[in-house]
Image (cartoon, rainbow over all chains, first blue to last red):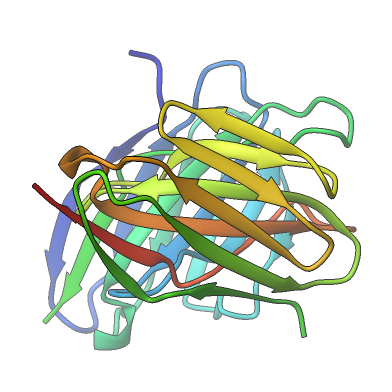
Length: 116
Length: 110
């Protein structure tokens, strides 16, 4: 299966620690997105990349959050000095740009973060 | 402010009892309306994209429709395996991000 993959699937950390998540998109997809989802809510947009360029960041993405996509393939999302409010499911999605017409985004299984 | 609202928050159906889920949007320059299914502990699974008012798409027991203000997901003769959270999301001008609603949790009882 060549769907979107995310690692780790679960992460438990103590407040104040740094964590890093990885996302591998569908191989031919050049756009990659990060979303965050809390219980009972829909996913909230964090940031997206086209190839290696980070083109948009949400106001939700505080300076403790950083995302990279160094070679336009996989991406990492790092959270520094974690807080209990960071506990959530972090979702990665990818899409294939076809001009400005289509934008079907395919999601990975997510990384569930618990901050103690 | 761009917003997507889904109703009802939760819906319980008997197997075979058809119903509809609503997604209303207030976004400027809608370019597409997406429907996803999400099972507990998993990522959203893509179902449909609708690009213009009047468009309809079908997949098995599901049918999605779009007007200028809202979208409906019609479920015909649902089965217990259709139980999930159904999310809609808007895609608007000038960005490739999706704006999601809070979802409708559907439970289909046998």
